[in-house]
Image (cartoon, one colour):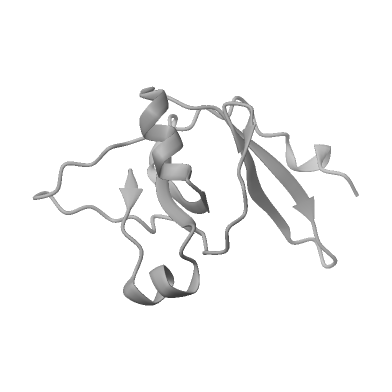
Length: 115
């Protein structure tokens, strides 16, 4: 679903568009991501499910993280903005949401991450 940026974000990151993506196999978990014309691009594709490529990282101390780097093979163009993981999108029953579910395939097991 496309997410309207705050007034401050529209001023600070005018080229950035925010979208919420839900994981196909875990719909309560969502990702809020931003990118140049990202909402426009997803609406134009008009697909029920999109494939997202992640860059997986391991940090000193064993913390692991990820960043979304492409959607359906097209790179996400950085235009500032921000992202969030968990359930940053919330839901309001009065709003009709445009959802773009993510099909991520399989995450590697923890032991498969680069050391």
